Length: 251
Image (cartoon, rainbow, N blue to C red; front, side, top):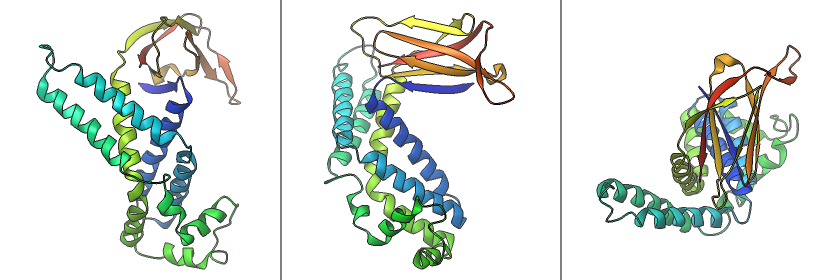
């Protein structure tokens, strides 16, 4: 099954983008080639750009604190396993404390590194990091993989509280949705959302053998999904047949 996610607000949209970038960064850092480590730096700079949003940290802390309060309200409930509840609350609290302890803007330690910033200023220029433009960077790329990886780990260390907070919060958000099967008639599906309930994330899983691509739109009152199929020229067209998929709404 192929998973698609759709955020209902800009805050969750930003968090999903950062999660995607952190996942890519981890995958690239684990490899050995200089080219992979070059694109690890590209990804690191993208994280700095996305994380520069002023209210990101406060939004993340607020959401973590909200979830902690919600879980603590379950204490004393006979249907709740206290040990498991303690574990979840401790994980939330740990992520909150470590993120809250980070002072200043996200990535401030990196933006003060002149060598990194010299690479960042040229990395968006086509071919701008050639050896004649940045000989010191070219020399770094010739180092052993373990040495380059050590540098990358050191540079990303200050961003790890943000990555952990995102992982905890998005994990809790995804777990809040209950998946159920729905049917799209003539390639289209619409569902009204109940008043008074605020959803933050839509998740859908669809069988890849169907060859369908969802176009998702939504707001606080309704969601709409159109199932498309790509033609030989790459254009998307509505698939007119009836089909089914799995849907979860997370709050």
